[in-house]
Each structure stands twice: as structure tokens, then as C-alpha cells.
Length: 321
Image (tube, rainbow, N blue to C red):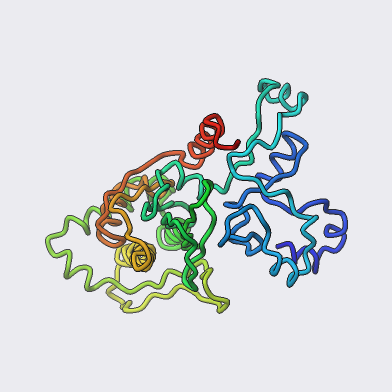
């Protein structure tokens, strides 16, 4: 994105003081100070992710011709950036003595609140995108997934993204179920299709008739080639319910393949935390056990916000000293 701005918006490039991310903007507005953390910047390639030592990757910066002066200071997620500005505190109704922490990436914070602190701990975020994370005590290099720095020291997270997770269900509803409103589709139709399939006496035979679905409706983050979603094994007798089940199965298997892949490097724990709006859909956890893996799934609401709050507790414990 930085290079795109340089090449396509030279006026913005010339006028910009720093290039950062959401927490850079928020901490600057709250405190007047610049900051960014490793969990936010590690998958850009600009951070020295393998070292995870609050330093930039000089080789990448040089190759990209990005002056590190134009990047925010690196701080740990639980480090204090500064005290809130008095005028901002007053306008927000916050105490003037409030300390603002650097913060972190939403997926990494969700992982933290979900208990991902030891190697093999895993979680899944099921929303617009589906994301699978596994905690490791070393950086894992792979062409098949990203690795990012965790919000806590000496830990990394595998970061595996399905671009069209929940949004694939939205696409199906808008394309094949136009007579339904959103509440009817997610509250009745989809749960009913899942329950009918999962409770069917001929479930194995039924699954054998399902079309195959490659889950690239939103492309693929792990190749420069343009990938698209496909259905195969569709006939005039294929009902829309089978197309829907094929999408659910294809999405869930995609994340399950990642957990299987990472298990070659670190044993994946049986308990898997899960959060996100799509995880609330009735019957989806049962489908996940069938197609992602027979794990003990534990749902947690507002996981990113909870993870941010937990950074405050980590700061109060003295970890930032």
C-alpha cells in the first residue's frame, strides 16, 4: 500500500509524515505520539518478524526504497504510548490521567483473549473472512500461510486467511435465495439445511452427491495467480441446498487443511477457540467438527475487544517495564 501511494498518489506521498496502521492513527489522535506494534506490521515484510525484536527489516526497506524515518516507532502492544491529551480526554469523558497503550491487530488480540499463549494453542475467527491461527514459539516459514508476531513477546502466530468466508454465504443468499431476507436466511434457512444434512440417516450418501467447491470466491492470498471459486459435479438435479452445503464444506475443509499442515511443525491442541458472527449460526459448530476437525470448540464473543482489555492488565502487571 505504501508503494502504491508513492507510485499513484505522489502528492499524498510527499505530504505524509508517517505511514502506519489503525493503531498508529488512533494513538496519534489520543496522545500526539506515533506508534505501531509488531502484530500489526509483521506480515507486511517490513518488520523483522523472525527476530521479533522491535526492529525493521532493513533489507526489505532498502529494496522497497522506504526511509525508516517515515515509519512509526515500534512498540510492544502493551507498551504505553503516552498519556491522553487533556482536550481529547474531556471530549470523550475519560480521565485526564488515562494511559494509552500501543494496541495490536484485531486477529492477534482475538487469539490472545482466546488463550493462545503456548505452542499449539489454536483459534478460528469466523466472519467476513475466516482466519485460522496457531501459536508457536518460533517463526515458521511457509509458502502456504503467513506468520505474524504475537502481541506478547517470544510468540508467533500462523495466519491463514480464507478471503470469502462469511461473505461467501452472503453471496449465496443474494444469488440463490433472493426471496428471503437476511434474518430468514441466517436464522432459519441455513440452520435448517445444516440440521437436515447432519441429522440425515443417509448422511454419507448425501455427502457423496454434493458438488465440489473450491473456496476462492474472494481470490487467494497465497499466490500471485488469479484464483476463482468453482463448482464441479453439478447437474440439473442439484438443488440449491446442496450448493450451499458444498460452500460450507469447502470453506471449513480449507481451514482444517491449515491445522493439519501446521501439525507437522507443532502439535495442535484439541481445544480450539472460535469467535465471529458466523460462528453463532446454529449448526455451524457441528458442521465444523465434521469438516474442519473434531476439536473441542469454545465460542467467545467480542474477542478482539477483550484482547485489547487484557493488554491493559498486562501493562498493569509491570510487563512493559
